[in-house]
Image (tube, rainbow, N blue to C red; front, top):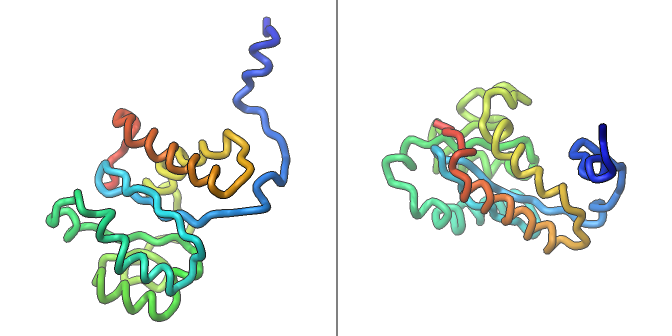
Length: 163
């Protein structure tokens, strides 16, 4: 028998809204081994801003990762168009020779294959918890994204190895 509190706690309830259509964010986040590379929010994602990020910000996100692990890592991209401009592919080929996956990359990766990547199976599955709370601003959405990342980092029993 269900009581009223059981009904209000329905985790499978859905409601159709256009609540977050007024703003959006572009976020880079990743896994390296069993470590989360913290989220980075882009104000305006273009090929140029992405390259500036890779040159200036990305090395700082990897400071705590040993050089041996960094030398063996692969850089996987999603299908976001700004990441595949000609100058971006040239930069990736120079910076991650034969070690980046994505459209036009040197390593073949079947498109839309979430069963093959921990980023889609694990990381973004957990990051989707940001939609559990309705937000009224871009700043609130960013706060939820960072809180979800912190939750993943502080619960190591939920982490997976991406190696």
